[in-house]
Image (cartoon, rainbow, N blue to C red; front, side):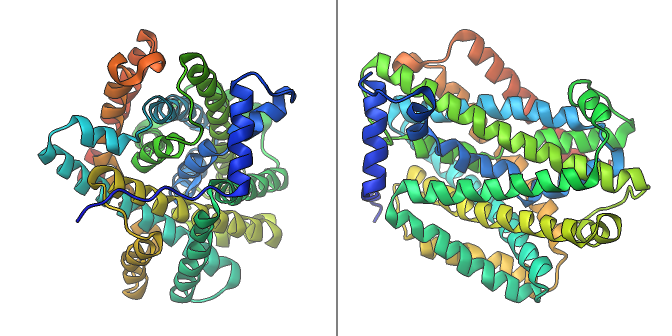
Length: 435
């Protein structure tokens, strides 16, 4: 029998965060501007993990190795789209107290809701497969242990991370944000080591350039697969009921603080993605190594080019990315099941079940990098069914109240949704036809 999930118990750190946020929203806080922002930071950083997961490693490394700095502008454009979509997702949770999956359940017909649930569960499984394999590869490269043992270690570590949920939202946000920080610092180190051509970096970051059909396909892969469906569902859930306010003025102020959270988190994710491509361009493309097609190849090639330190830093960044994104993927799966079905299962059971496909891939000896890439194709099927409902709901005043989209926001969001859908259709076409 379906049941609504029990609310997470508030811990002392959560309680302090919420009280500090409410004081700021009511104008009773005497803290400075940065200190006033701190209680609101966190949700967007968890959602941003989807933008620096192992799938991004594979795509950005391939793009940088084959085309140098040429596709940097695609990452910049992707980040702007991500900011808009994640802002709408957060706004939906703030304005309605319901997440995107719950809104779908409330407003769509039961048959369509079941279809959406099945589709999004498949998307969540595909996401989890990629992220779990990425973390396992990270352990494998860093500790030089068999991939099956790395998979078991990944499972244990993600159980420990997810166990932090029992201590409230703040400790989990801190750990996930710290892992994003590890990835960021790792790529700062990589960038210093590989000494990129900063003139070319700045030029290609703002000037759209393509080099033949292959670059179009790869640009489509970077841009079309950037906004992940599970991150859209998760961000709306992270904001629902986090800080409860009802007055329109306070709702608008809360949304402005969350907008700052989104801008900071998505900008960090964009810089990390840009650094991945810059590293590949500087280390591989400049040496004529344009066919670095897998994460393992990139790792092995780094040592003779940049030294063992660069190789180790790369493995650490991949591990932090895989562990954080695998944990966040499990959280998103929980949100999807709860929202569409009002059915809640313990997170450790979901983590255990979603480990099975990854362990099977490892056990039968499939190429993990290739499997990681294939899993991204399924995400393309699910993306329109996340973005289009989000734009529909946030553009309706009866649903959003004081936080309804401005007309220009709806137009921009509709354009972004249409562009992403077209690009994903093109990505699927080229994937299945070999075009």
